[in-house]
Image 1 (cartoon, rainbow, N blue to C red):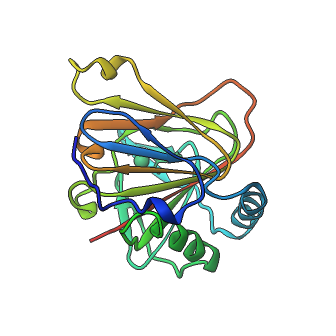
Image 2: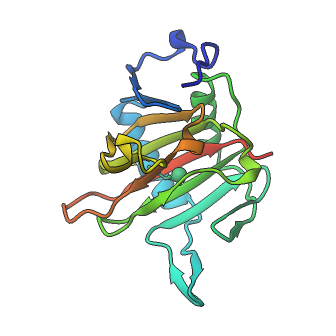
Length: 210
Ligand SMILES: O=C(O)CCC(=O)C(=O)O
Ligand SMILES: [Mn+2]
């Protein structure tokens, strides 16, 4: 595990910081990073004002719709899974959220990928945020609003116990999850589909693109 004692300023957030203990990486959860009123307001504004789009990926020669809506806001364009998302002027609310996240980790971000999970059928499959433009050991700041969904982590090494036994974290309304250190090199993460009735959910992952 990489030790990054200077990464977090524990004094600047009133919310509870919970360190999720994993090998080869560092994951920190702040529940209620945004209080309930702020979170309700953010959910309402982002649902209405973000320029959501349905993207498609090519698989076996077919064009398959992503099982969620997405958007990218940032200083530069971003490419992942063969999809290029052009830069769009920052929404002021996204800048406020960015500043608040930057205040608990001494990193700055220059883009945010937004996901809109309409219901339990929407998901993101196993992947790591490891595009070359993110550089090595990126800090990913992930905030969630709306219905709680289960975020799972699995170790990439088939011999590691957490390859089969996933680490599951409930990402609740207003929570912040930081993935840092070697997390993206050694772990995959997903939001699985669920048959449970779940409210719509918006997730924002703030990133630094080089
Ligand atoms: O919705 C989430 O919590 C995760 C989203 C994610 O992993 C991504 O956008 O790369
Ligand atoms: Mn991801």
